[in-house]
Length: 319
Image 1 (cartoon, rainbow, N blue to C red):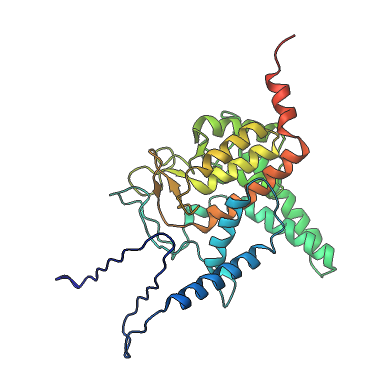
Image 2: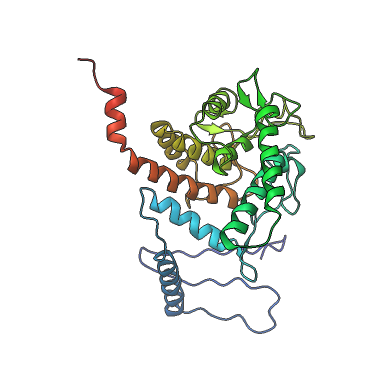
């Protein structure tokens, strides 16, 4: 222990050797020694548990290592009594080093509800489906009427004729990556001309080298100074949208490029900085959920339209 009460230790090991290490605080009894055999037993039990747990997965696609790592991460972030996921094990790591863009994960932020009109449509639509499928009593006529009214309102006021794209909210022409939820929740088909036009607009404004920003803070101020990196959740959601829109080569390139930004354990924080560093809370549950979702959808679409055929169509030499 040094003058600052910090503990330091150094152990030299040769290849194949193992030693056990226990860190304890506030223990009343003597320090317990960890035998090598016990360390090996604990290690083997841990490996057996995770192999058995992963063995229940039905995913057999192209990116099993990344999907498995994300699944393990989400399992470790689960609150056992309720099964709920924590957003991240950290609470307020900065999105800009030295800046004030720190979102405290112990709270719900109003800006994350900017597309709550769309989600009102989703709530009504799913309520109708559940009541119909399970024979539950419900004011279905009213729900149908309200759901369809919201749909017409979004299609009329949420569409920007100037941008030829759906917009963040009715009083702006600013784009927002929350729009990527529109085809995912079934509000619009993934190949609808209006949605394809929205994707092109997002490509021009929110996408840089296949990575996706949530929104532009300069065009849509959120109350904090500074800029932020690309948002990892949004990048995987972008892959999902591209795949369902039939842009498979582009989707696969974006997905596999995004995999290179994970750390050595396959983990992702909220954001990727301009020079490739991870920023914000870490690891982020949303990102790992979106990775799994993107991998499943991309696998499914590639199996329906093998990339070899797509490549031949795109790059076959002229006769």
